[in-house]
Image 1 (cartoon, rainbow, N blue to C red):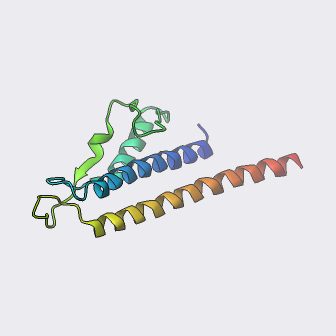
Image 2: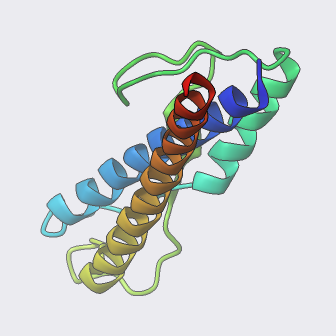
Image 3: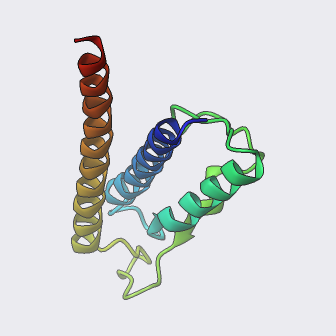
Length: 136
């Protein structure tokens, strides 16, 4: 696999993981009023390290999912990357969702996703420019 293809593949995997984290954070917000609900988060760094390690051990080739509902081809589930948040202070009903934390985390995650989309867009623009200059 070429260096450019590897770079695009890593960026794409990071985007998929950011999307999964967004779903977990949105679930926390949706359950803010659910009694005994424990806020969760997605271990992005751990998931990315696992994805890169799997790519390296598989000779640079790995299966990729396009939806968080798809089964992964490496035998591991997305649930392995879910962690309960450290309890700061739960509500009277036992719910640990802190809306300020969730809003901050979801905004940060969205910003990181936007950075990844810009990086991958720039990579494709560079490839298009290189192809156009070779034709002319």
